Image (cartoon, rainbow, N blue to C red; front, top):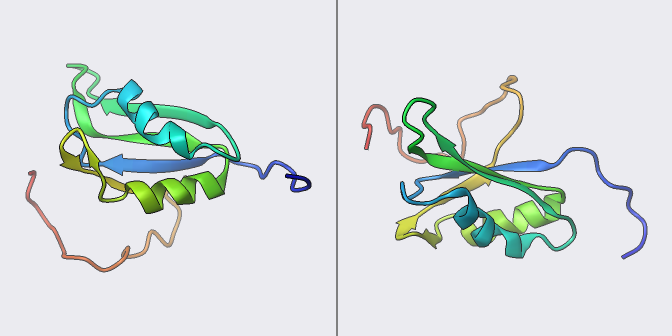
Length: 112
């Protein structure tokens, strides 16, 4: 350990392509093992306000950037509830430079 003051903000990760049965506790279970240098602050599945049904994505929040990076490396493309989930760091505040991501097909339309 030693040194290194607590570095400011918690790091939020976007978790996409979730199974619609996946709940907060499932996210927490899947990601808590990465919380080594800090805590897993939050694990939330986005739900529709009207129906309370999952919207197929969620967010997890780590105290430590290192833990968040580990979680992205391990969990992006991993199987959760039978789906290969997408995990990446969610940049807070929709400022400029929400660049074009890492290439990848220009998936317009398609509500799949």
